[in-house]
Image 1 (cartoon, rainbow, N blue to C red):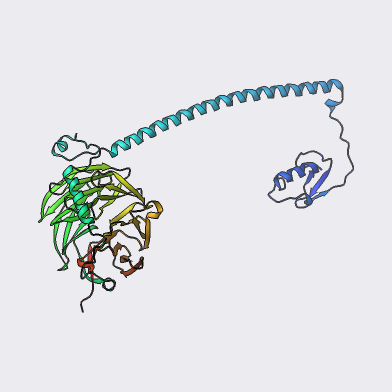
Image 2: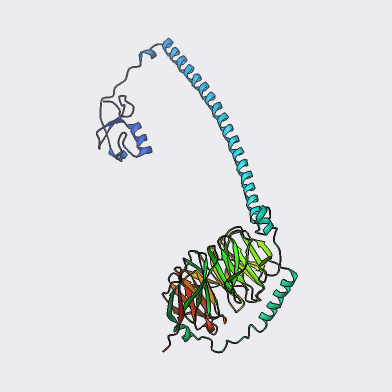
Length: 478
């Protein structure tokens, strides 16, 4: 009868109730204390599961080598020699381990230094790249050597014009009455699609409205003109590059492209073309004074142009790719939305950063209210529109979150009462009631759209879907 752990005859044998195996009591109790299982199996085993075996006590004879003094001395000598040899081997192994550890630490330190140096060089290169872009001037296009300079403010003449427009627009803004015949809440609620027109555009990206005409840009490299009054397609303007943004200024249609170009067309004839961005242009905006055009792009650049000559007059770079932009209705501020979820506010005259608002997601679109202190924005993946207050900072600047569903286009009416939204789930109108300082939703349709604009006296909405279908929403005539 041998112990299942030591393989020797146990002095105090016990047997397991579960398997019938025999063990030395002190050994099996220690094993159970550490593992809570029976040796050789995965079964749980407690001390209570052990039964003592009563046997006659056996006195084991001493081994032959320990029966005499000389034999015991030799055994002690052999044991000491083995102990000394083991100690020597252990010291040797410790010395080798220390050398390997020192080498590994040295290599790790060197790798960390190299990574830090490369990271610093990468960041410096990115910063330098964000401040440089190849210009498309005639000489530069021929030689490929023309490079952009650092940020620039507006020339004095245009800066003075900005100041004049601001003073004129701010005058009487607070007491400005609602124009006669402007749409009421009931008029907004009565809006419904009265016409659908399928334009020959592939994947519409933008919509601009001027009087009775809408300009729809698409990735097929054309801008289609649509007559809102006739509810019919008028003609197509060839741009030659995928269109990402479109605005009207007078009778001129200005388009931005994914190739970094900004092109102006008037009367069907291209009147100007310039390529200042090193990458896609993602947004266009016209200053209220209609002498300055602004563009933003993935190259992190903000560029102002003289609308008459379409020449660059100012430029500044930000820290992130830009996705959208808008001028304040007074013209003294310029807002740019970024891929990092920030909305940066700049002084129009100097292009100095004045404020920063956090949206929390890459900015899809933003628009200022005519009340002068609100702007609305929405981001990628968000199902709401955030209204910010320019007069506040931080979280306090979030005046309202409007639950609209996903939104890709925004438009505020002239009175600042109605905010139209366009998204895959349809077009909605959010209304701010000044008397009760509350928001309502007088209109929600199922007409999908990527962009929306207000018609005359807010009695009409024009929207375009991704597939190029233009929808006109207005009260049905009786």
